[in-house]
Image (cartoon, rainbow, N blue to C red):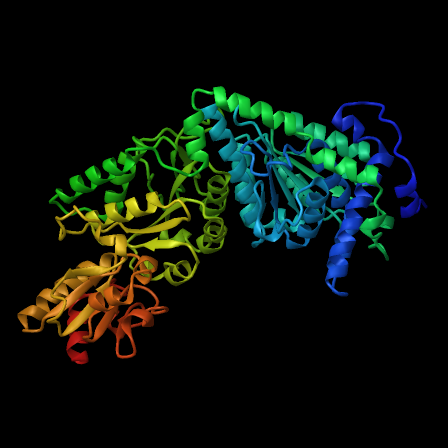
Length: 627
């Protein structure tokens, strides 16, 4: 057996072929580069003070060899500019693969990289199985849509997912894989660490049945690895590459060579790999400078909306304020989004159609996207409602597109875990959850508490058409994070006509009643605000003056100064109203406050079918008891 020290001290043989993948077929050269990666892993294992067993296991995985070939010969990136807009995207599905990628980045010249927190072109999606695949599908789909708009001269890169068989075996991955095949995302490839030989066989058969290309390679065969990547670069369909080692090579090495023994020529080879695309990046910059859409491309990649969109938003808000007939927040949101789509060309809508067929398109009339035309502005997910949030997370994280998604309240269960990385990365996205009041229990099933707990996520629950326009304007102007809009499909009468000032910009305000002379304060949002206003009228007839506070966005209200919050909430007893959980409401209600929600007896109506519905009579009784 060849010793590691012998490999490092032996001179590299002269190259017999100048093409990158042909060089990758030189076994000894690739072995030297791979052993350098294992040497860098030794540093990480030593830093863990004896707890580096997992890093040592990674050093024995077949991903060392295939990752070496990927970064040194295939991947489109430049260490001098990791944020290059036309770089390849790499997604990690498992946390244990982060040390390997960090070692490779250190060798290429990107030192001190915190892989677990994400880097330009590298996205860690450490989530339940299937989420990373959905994210990768979204990245690949965004590349096709951007190329359709700006051309291949500016957008021509690939998406790579590094995963394990478990990532491909979940039910969510089935929906995502079908979408990738349906949209013919040929620039998407999955690299599977098939350490447990045969674990990926069933997955490969299923993916092949869905229209994917599949390839099995051995980690000890550089020629096979190079051939697999050649297939990936030429394939007309998405590809799965399963890489494994022979059983004799599965054991983790007893000892890893320290990095000080890496020869200088090996280090130079890795640094050259990091600079391999420098000329390509400079050529891309020259093409960008001459491109007719250069300014627009830079604008969308920086997440900025076009000039003049605010004036259009205010005009649409004024039009909605003049509508006298009852209008649901959902219908108002559709009108506002459609008006913005005429001004913002990078606004893209997406929706799923569940079995009941209740979901609608956030951009009515937009041309659908298909494999033959990626220039459409509506992504139809069909019944793949579970994969929608994860795919659109990838679309948003790619950059260049402002995504507006719409799902029913019943399909919101997976939204918190998929939107969390978007909030962490500060990417813009608007996700609409539709409350269908034909099913009264649906509102109570909304994950309001879990969504409101996500850092850097703004959750809006407007109560009328004017509030809906105000919340949409606030969501679109965000450049540092996503927003969730919770829209009721129930028509609401007009109770606000003034639209000059954006009242929702502070998160909460007094919608009706006096600031000082109040016996109690009703705090509500969404559909329950109309009920609170009706209860206020009934209480006024009984001689009890109360104020109604609209609280459409908790996070914005929390950012206001203490004096403003105290002025809005008042000193009188506070009663919170929401068809959901009371979790978190104590912050606004105080020690003497009361919450009326899904678990409250106040929601038990006398008529059948109205369970979970807030009634004005229930609020009147609650206020009188409180007083």
